[in-house]
Image 1 (cartoon, rainbow, N blue to C red):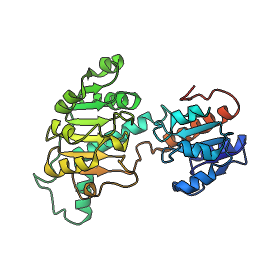
Image 2 (image 1 turned 180 degrees about the vertical axis):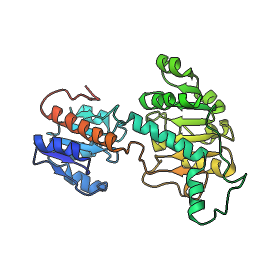
Image 3 (image 1 turned 135 degrees about the vertical axis):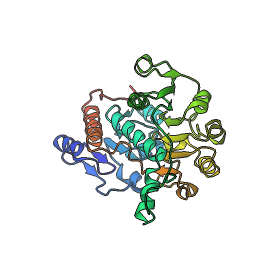
Image 4 (image 1 turned 120 degrees about the horizontal axis):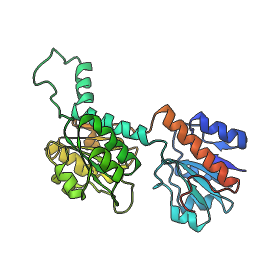
Length: 319
C-alpha cells in the first residue's frame, strides 16, 4: 500500500503505521506542505493521513488518483476536508473525536483565567523591569467565581468546559441544537438562544463547528450585545470570529477582553489584534498535551489501517 502522512505526528501513531506498512511515506519536516508540494506528494496514495492544516479538496483527491481509499484526518473537526467530494469518489474520511476533549477544555480555562486576570500582560510588565512594588490598582482584572459562563455549542468540548465550572460556582448558559439533560442536571445550566447568552454572560466560550452558517458567528453586532465587562474565548475555529470587528471592539471598549487559540486566516493573525494588550493569543495549541496528541495520532493511524484492510474504520464520517 502507498501511504502518505502530510506532516510529522507523535511517534505512537508512526509506530502503528510502521508495523503495518513499513514503507509509508511522510513529510518529515515540521511544516505545512505548500499546495504544489501536497498535490505532488499525494500522487498514487492508497491512504492519506492528513492534518487540519491540509486542505483536502477535490483537486487533492483527484491528484491522488482513483485508487485512494481513505483520508484519515488527525483532528476532531473536518472542515479542512471536502466530505462531499470524497463521498462522491467513494473515499472514506475519518476523524479523531473524544481524545482531545479534556485537553481543549483545560486550555479554554487557561485562556479564560489568563485574560480575566491579565496574566500575560502583567508578566510582560514584570519582565520589562517595570514592577516597582505592590499597588492597590496594579493590574486589576475580572472576577471568575460566581460569574456567568456562556457556552456556545455544548458538544463534547463545550460540555466539558461547562462541567469544569462547578468548582467556581458559576451560572451556566448554553446554546445547542437539542437539550443537554446531563449538563443541566450537573451544573444547573440553562439552554438559551445566542442573543440571550451574549447579553447575560461574563465569559463567552465558543465551541461550535465551522460551517457556512457559523462563519463570523461573532461579528460587530454580536459584540455589541455583550457586556462591556465581558470576555470572549475561542478554542473552536478561527473563522467563527470576525477578527477585524473584534479588534475594533477591544480597542473601543465594547468588551473587556478576548482570548484566542485559533484564527481566521491561520497562521496569520489580524495585525490590529497583535497591537492590543487586552487579548491573549496562543498558536492553536488547545489540544497540545503529550497524552492528547499521542492518542490522536494513534486513532488516525488505526482508522487508516482499518480502512485499507477493507474494514469499517472506527471513526468513519461518511458511511
